[in-house]
Length: 357
Image (tube, rainbow, N blue to C red; front, top):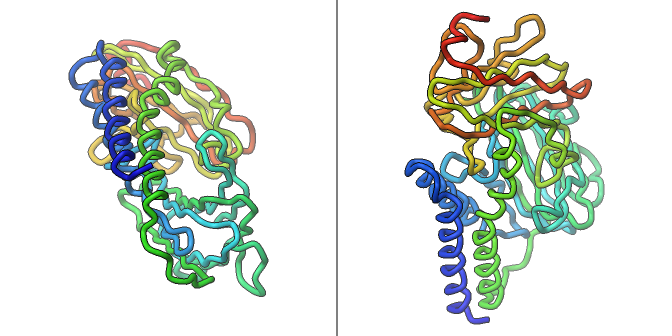
């Protein structure tokens, strides 16, 4: 396949994605329709950021920033991603900053649906110095000394996550990956390989509207409910293996709120995050759209969240829906001591809630 033909296919795939999105959002308000195209553009930006990878000399690339939101980003975590080879040796180093916890996970598999965690190490098992810096080897064989993360056969990607209670105010960490096996100078650009990459990107973008629509169908059919998100277990789809997820959605009028109340289960860390219908987190840079185990108000071992367009005052921890009629929420529980109980969910008038806690 010639490169120019592959380029045409990429452009056609983007056009097809836009047409699908237009059909899916035809009944929405102009602001929500624009939000869909912004989410599509962010997804493209995300994928372009990882379009050119070098598994011989990989880089830990910051993932899911506010311009590159893609499939339920979580700004209470900081992510870095590197594409690796399973027969090479790498050194990963960095510092945790004020992060409560850090995990480094190796994933095997090519497609999103087939990917699973195959090896991991966390900050509890890393040797940290006084500045909370770390260094470890990632390889098939255990090194003679130092921390080690096995690199199983079939490994394709490494994700590093740092968990923050209040990332906007805490000292942030950093990380780097270096190749220990110095490769030979690679040949020049392979036109056939580049053409295949263009086609792969086009296929991914053309599928994005379908993926989002399918992923949110149950949320749209059963709003104002919550359930266990069983599909996201054991590191499926590049998720953190030690997290148990709860997921639900809201559908509210301007003068209504969704009251979510439940018991805090003993765990290492937990948070709640709001998303739009296109699986992008809401505007965390300017609005209160999440709470963590470090910022939530727990009374008698219980949390109480109020999802609404405005703060009713004194009714619980407010989460700003930005006035959206519909959206999703996810609760993440890291290393829970027991299965988290499903919280109660009640749709009510905002006027009922002022000062009720």
